Length: 366
Image (tube, rainbow, N blue to C red):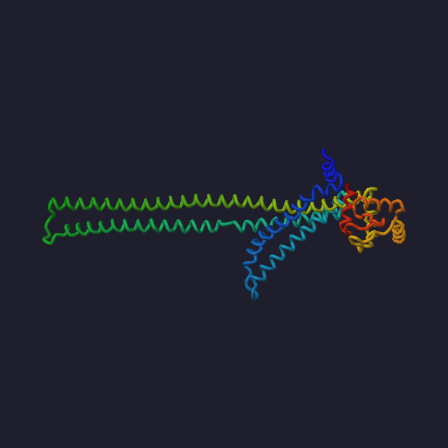
């Protein structure tokens, strides 16, 4: 392994391990959790809005006022939930246990999460629930087909009745001859044939009635099957939104909780590292660098103060260091090309104060 690669791995695995290794994950989860809050506000809005729609008009612009009020209420609710979860997790991690106050905070957090879940889930259900529209559309479709069948049925039945009436008139005319004589055999046979035709037509009418009932029943059954299928799709979508709402709540808890763990863990790691000799040296070098640059007033090309004068400044500032520490610091600045000796053996600044801080910290970190 190359030394340069080893030093990078050292920074990654030993120095600020939690902060450096989980920084990207913390940012992704934290900001992604806000996306969860936005969707929960959106879903919850439809539930509360549908609830207050039945309120009678009491003042001008009531609908606009309620819209803004509901939105602000839900945003405040979600922010409060985030705050309570964050404080509860932070307190639990600091105490490394649960006391009465932490338990109360966790109970409030669970209550807020449950309330948010209820509002958003019902809002999502109101948003995708189209069963009423499905029933209405299918009913209209069924009625249109039934009306069409009835019209066709009535037309055919009217035609049959008209033929029956025609045959009946012929029979009446033939049964009442003007001379009052008896019917001939041929006339009786003709009347019998006409009566048979009338019976056939009446049978056709009954067939048409049965056909109408059958067509109506088939249409209703077919459309009812379509309704059931569409409602099953709505139910599947509803189950999907249950999972989505649960996932959004989980993302919020994970994002806020992990951020609290990340911040607290990073603070503890940094605090422990700053108590080591290596990081105490960093702090000392940065303080000496500030004096060296006279609070950042020195710029590139300016002359640096001597080690003896630095010792006087250190005593004035009451820093805990000796003359050897100052000598080591001056040598470090030369090695890092922060300063460079001129022709008259005076040290001149080669970089600005901010760049010098980066060089000192980088050197100490390595």
